[in-house]
Structures are given as C-alpha cells and as structure tokens.
Length: 306
Ligand code: CP
Image (cartoon, rainbow, N blue to C red; front, side, top):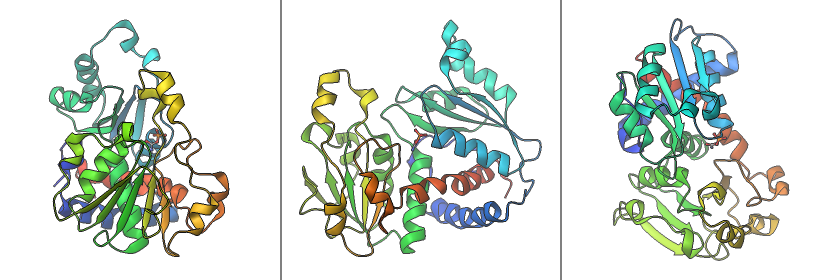
C-alpha cells in the first residue's frame, strides 16, 4: 500500500505494489492516449524540487500531474531558490509541505530524500539522490520489461556501464533481486556495483561478472546500458580514462537474440551509437515515454485517488 507514504527507496515498494502499479500504469497509458483529463488531481498541488539537472524525470512528473488535472509548483535550479542563501533542506521541506500535497525531489546527496521524508508530513518521492537510488526510474524500467515480455521472472538481463555511481542500476538491482532472473554485470573494475547493493542479491539469482560485452550479451533478453556518471568523479582524469569503455554498435546488435531489447535510462553520451536507434532492438525512447503513465499511477496511488 503506497497511500500517503513516501517513496524513497525501491524497498518501499513490494512486489504486490508493483503488480498494482503496472495495472494502473497500463490504464493511465490509455488516459494519455485518449488525451482526456480524468480530473483525479483537481485541487491537488505537486512541488518539484530539483537540485540537480533533469529532463525526463522532472518533465514527466510535471506532465503526469497536469494530465491528472493537478497543478505543479517547481524549483528547477537550486541557484534560483533560497538554498543559494544557505537555507537548510529541513527548512525548505517544511515550506514545501505547506505549499503542496506531494513533493518530488532530486538532490545531489545520497540520503537527502530519506532526510526530507523525516521532516515532511506530506509524501516525498525520491527523484534521484546522488549515487543512491532512483526508485521511480526503476519502476518504469520494470514496467517496460513487463510490457515487452509480459513478465519479469525468467529474464536474462545484462547491466552495462557505470554500476558504481549509476543510481538507476542500484535501485534496479535491488528490485530485480526479488524476481527469478539471471544477471550479467558488465563494468570496468573501478565502476563495479557497490557492495551495499551487490550483497543484497540472493543466492537464487544467478550472477555473472565481466569487463567486456562480447561473449556476455548474446544470450541476454535485456541490455540495460548506462552512462559513465561524469558528475560523480572527484578526479576528472579518471573519468577521461573511462569514457568510451562501452559502445553498443551495430556489431554488438547483430550478435543479440532476435527478441532482445536495449534499454537505457538516458541521457546517453556515446555508449549507444545513434545508428542503433533505428534497429528493432532500441527501446530507450519508448522506455522514457512510459515515465508519464507510470508516474501518473504512482501519484494517484500515493495521494489515494485512483
Ligand atoms: N533517467 C533520468 O533520470 O533522466 P533525467 O536525468 O533527464 O531526469
């Protein structure tokens, strides 16, 4: 049950919740396609506080609220808010809870959403906390797999790229660990999955580790490709030595199973070549489009109006 609860970690969502979210997201997809306002959020206000850049997450949350008939107030840049004057996160949240019914927050510090939830009487949705988690991205990632394959159980998923700093893969690994899946984790050694997430993978989930894609992606149902997270590196030379570590090109694509799909939370830099966009394997733009119905479903369930 998500009603009136904050969504800080993917652990806040049970598999039973996921089933309900998928069903409702499918219904919301119909609402989006019919272009009709269901007026579910009339008189409700969402505050979006984004202290890190975003295109998909902020715009899709705001679009989702508008499509439900609600309103949005927004901080899209910390420098234009009183954070720039030194206001604490706790005080900012105390203000935002008075101005809105639900707060969506992105913050550069891991744990910031958890802290915000402790100070808020209104639900907080974590839209990404540093290198921590990005639970609503994970829910739309799982929804994409569910739409494509009709199930999550039984899938072979290769997670590729920056598994150390990529918050989307952290939440996704925790979520996939609750299903009967096979995982292949592919990253440079210095960007492997942090132990706090890797140690949560249970024994029944088969895991392979590799530094290269070749020989490890050919049997995958899903390639989940991620960007090297430039903004998280203290040493820019280290980042420069890692860019271009992986590039999904037509040669890789030709080696995949015929019904495999390629996903990416986006934005991408150079880890998927543009020519791959035009192949039948590319799903990353479709995946991003599911951000609207999934977030409509989440807002409705959390505010208890569906
Ligand atoms: N996937 C994702 O979080 O994209 P944005 O950074 O553009 O929100």
